[in-house]
Length: 287
Image (cartoon, rainbow, N blue to C red; front, side, top):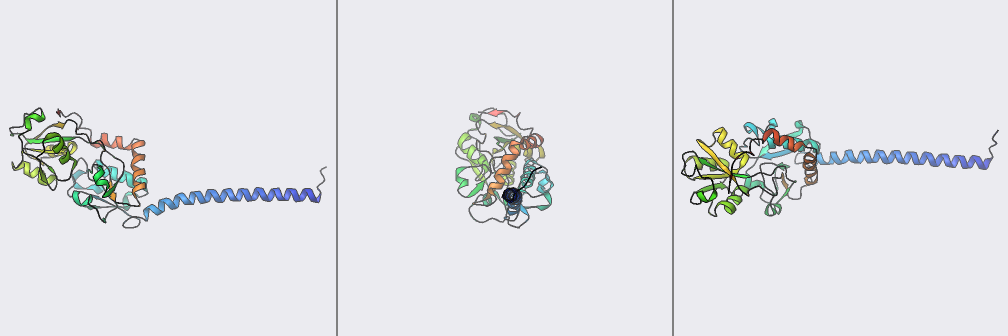
């Protein structure tokens, strides 16, 4: 039989109290950690223009294959699908996402914005980084030349054969930069793809430089009438890629960037590219 002295009892009591204290501390620590993680996500959803709702901007109009039928809220089209996937990673379900429209130039200009994210084929450049924030890239596109079927340049197989052509591109875009750098220095500029495609239709320009997915859509949908894709411009793949734009210094930039990185890592971006952008790799290349 074990005999407990007062000294032994005091020691056992102290040990028991210590164990209880440690267990309580561990439980509190775990609860605090879980609460912190929940609070972090809650904090993100309250940092938006409209607390609890993520406002995403795109172009007006927005074209396939990036947005189907000019309806980003459908989630159909590559950028519409990416936007909703990013929103979900950030803690916003589809019911808590709202869409607005902006011009391309206004989106990358300095100053306050009335949206949280903007997605409309913005190539990431050092110059633009001075005015806005970017997420990591969600797509790296090439640029292509679109011409009318009855154009004197319709049978060209090299860039040298179109050196005398009058070429257009959207102002401030990667298409303009690549056209200026790789095709010829003198490029006509337009405010958006609608104006540039209308100029091609009206014979105001001989050829239009635009990112390859947009070029395919323009021709297939008849946006540019009686036209063809001459080919992809050799060396025109955007090394930085397209990123989602946020206002400069946005508190949402880390969360949006983390979301894009996660979607790239788990294969979601590859899956969406195969779904929406699969027809753009077989076009000829113009060098």
